[in-house]
Amino acid sequence: MSHRGRPFAVESPLPPHLDGLLAYWKDLCRGQADMPFADDIDMNRVRELVSDSFTLGVFAKPARYRMELARTPRAPVVEADLPDRFIDEVALPSPLEYLRAQAEATVEGMGPTIYAHDHDGVAYQRLLLPAWGEGQVKLLLGAVEYR
Image (cartoon, rainbow, N blue to C red; front, side, top):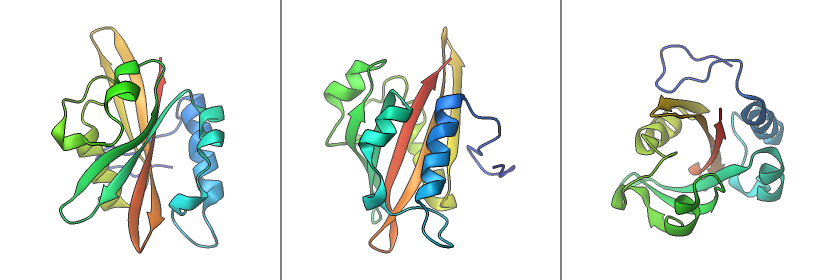
C-alpha cells in the first residue's frame, strides 16, 4: 500500500509485526468498505500480532483523541499514565512523538498511516489504523514496532 504525497504515508515493506496487523485490519473490512468497524477489532488478536498497541477514541467536534487502551511493555509510562486521557492535555512520551499530527492525518485521509522515529538511539515505527463507528472514524488502532 502506497499513498505517496500524503503525510505519514504507508510505504511497503512494513516491519513484520506491523505488516501482520495491517493484514488483519484489511481482513476485517466488510464488502467494499475501506476500513473495518471499531466493534470488529479484537484486541486479544491485536496483542497476538504486536506487543505494543493502543487505541485512541476519536471525537469529531472539536477534533480530539483520547487514549483508551494501552499495552506497551516497551513504554510502561504510556500504559500506566495515559489511558482515559486526551492526548492534547498531556506530554506525550516516546513512542508517541507526533501522535496528534499522525492521528489527524489518519482521520482526514481515512486510511493507515505510519510514523518512523530514529533518534537518540531509539528506533521504531508506529502504525495507526482507522476504524468506523457511528458514521465517522470512531477509533484509531495504534501499534509500535521497535528496531
